[in-house]
Structures are given as structure tokens and as C-alpha cells.
Image 1 (cartoon, helix red, strand yellow):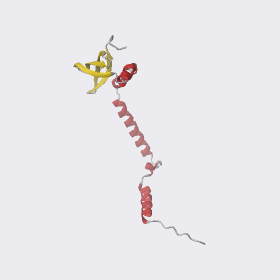
Image 2 (cartoon, rainbow, N blue to C red):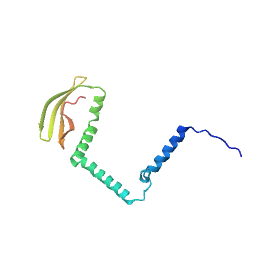
Image 3 (cartoon, rainbow, N blue to C red):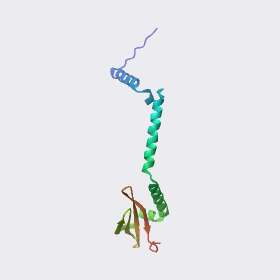
Image 4 (cartoon, rainbow, N blue to C red):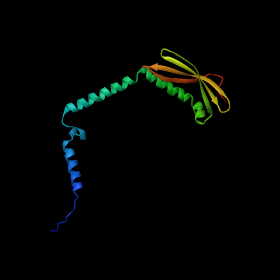
Length: 145
């Protein structure tokens, strides 16, 4: 019988030992096993449900409606947004600002490269002590062609 001698470096043996010891001290539930304890599953489920409740609490009906309004407003404003991205809007001026309670209105003026000026306003809403942009509206009759 012929025996082959393999040389293994000390660092390699040390790394393998550390890895094996690490696997022995890791709880079986952390490796995807069931751990055999029903309490672990219940604790996980309760933590999951608590997380879902906390996430829902962040998104009140008012915030969801605000998000819907913002998306609809941006979908309807694609032509103007494209003009903005094309560099056609060269300046935006801020005018009068009025705020009352949970609503605010900021008058703005957009100046286009061709000299056209559009007056409009930005509506803001206050929810949970935080201000949010609600929509941007151009006043009728001033839209450039």
C-alpha cells in the first residue's frame, strides 16, 4: 500500500477548526432548522405582526391619499416635466407664501428659454407635524405652445 503525504499549512488547519467550532455554537434555529421549539416560531410570528402594524401606522389614510394625489399630478404633468428635463425652463421664481394651519400655498413663476412665463402655485399640506408638497398647478391660459 502506498501512502501519499499531503502537507497542510497550520493557518489552514486553524481556519477549519475555527469554522467547525463556530458551527457548533450557533443555535440550530439560526441555520434554518426548526430548533424543535414551538416558542421560537411564535416569537418570530409576533415580531413579524408587530412590524406590519408599525409599518401600517406610518401610512395613515391621509398620507396614502397624498401619495395618490402626487402620482396623479405628476402623470398629468409629463409634458411640462419633459420640458424641464430638456432645459426649457430657465428660471423659477418664488412669490407670495401663505400658510394657515395645515395648508400652505406658494406662488411661483416659471420662465422658459423662449421667454414664455407661466404663473402657478405649489400646494403644501401638513400631516403629523411635517410639511409635504401636494401638487404644483399652472394657472390657465399661460401655458406655452
